[in-house]
Amino acid sequence: MSTASPSTTLPQELALIASVLDLMKQEQQLLVSADTAGLDELTPRKAQVVAEMTALARQRHQSLAAAGFSADEAGMQAWVEGSGAQALSGWQELLDKTRDAKELNRINGMLITRQLSHTQGLINAMRTPAGGAEAAVYGKSGQAAPGGPSKRYVVG
Image 1 (cartoon, rainbow, N blue to C red):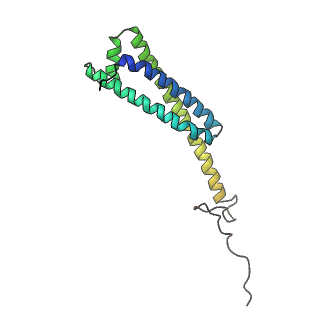
Image 2 (tube, rainbow, N blue to C red):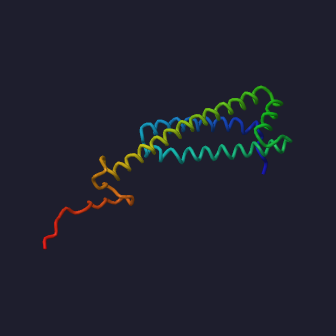
Image 3 (spheres, rainbow, N blue to C red):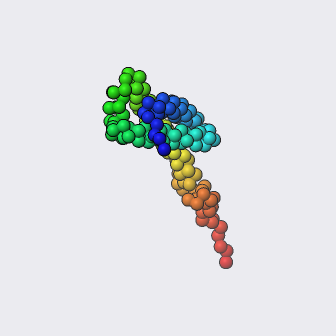
């Protein structure tokens, strides 16, 4: 199996990171609007693109090692410095877009955390009504909670 050279994987990686950024921006909008159906549709697409990016990065690392460079980002930096301005520019663009994706991921994670917190608050509100004196609407099992103690008197 021949490995792709960094000069061939770099443009492919740039195209994929652009796709990831676009998908993450869509994800952000879906999170803001709490569109779970849209998220369900988008998530597998995003996972597929990320898997493709991972495979390309692995190919790049293998080709760097075959060319005598270290199989990591430091090796890539050394390779691009000897490969001309276009390679250096493409590598820098990939690093910049990767940082953008990392920031979008951080923000989207915060949105997910906020939504989960809100959902947990709603679940807790259904379990324990305001005032706490009444019985909960739903128990931990998700089933309707019993009505509480009976107020009927036993007449003997």
